[in-house]
Length: 189
Image (cartoon, rainbow, N blue to C red; front, side, top):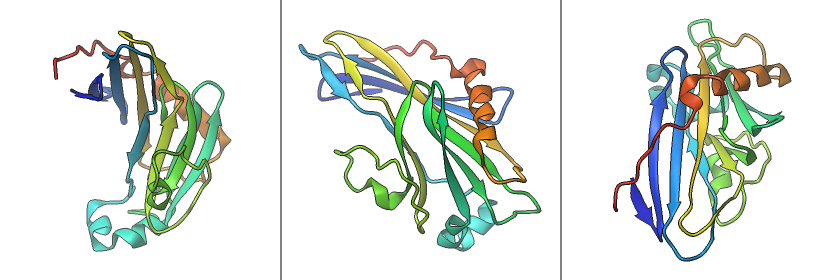
């Protein structure tokens, strides 16, 4: 919890009880006298490999993560990521997206140089594997509070390449009870 330029914020990581899923819930309160335009971007460096393999050579592991952009009817863009180098005979996989409506994405840290611009919305498979999701711009009136957030869902094995069939996993994640914004109170900063 804190305050940044007149915007009070509370951020909570919520883990799903009955599924390998996580949610970042964000609550924003505009304490300024005027409407504010806010952008939320979620970025996560994912390796999708056992810890020992990642520690041997992070760039090597990163080169084998395939990031596939997906377009969901109501949640916007999401990124399905699959480790194409099998680990213990499995291909770990996850999907990350916005709880509201994501408008753009990035798949490499090289694409995050200038956060005053929208994410590029194109796949870059370089040595700096990263998933970044940009939620739709928030217009927050003076005194108004608003909720937003992001989700992730993990599978320890996804034998085939990511595809539009994986859009069902987005529905699966966002149907979990933990996807619903809980009561995040504001603590004076």
